[in-house]
Length: 119
Image 1 (cartoon, rainbow, N blue to C red):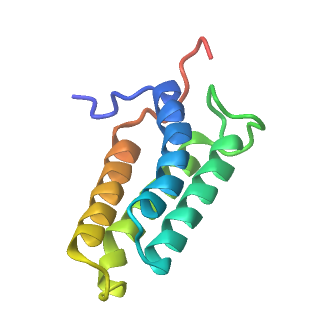
Image 2: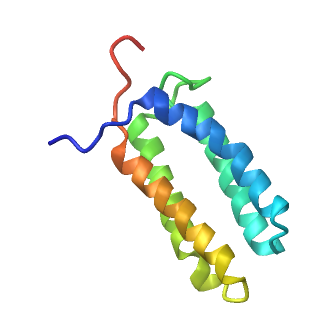
């Protein structure tokens, strides 16, 4: 059974939708400076490497999809681990960081490693 069922195009849409969410969430919920900086960095990083990925929605196609997915997985793991370093944050902030990180890890594991032939 192939566990990679998310197309690279769908993944690209998720990439570009996640950027404003990562920027807005900590500000809308008035989180502290540390998680706000963390998610801002994650948003800028995701936008940057998405623009350079070799998939349907990449602008300058230089980064292979496998590299993109490795960066997503690393970012997701960092977000999952962040509450261990951000001990002063509210439990809801920690839970949200773990949830976002787990989603990112899941998306990385579920996305195909090559765009469709039509792309």
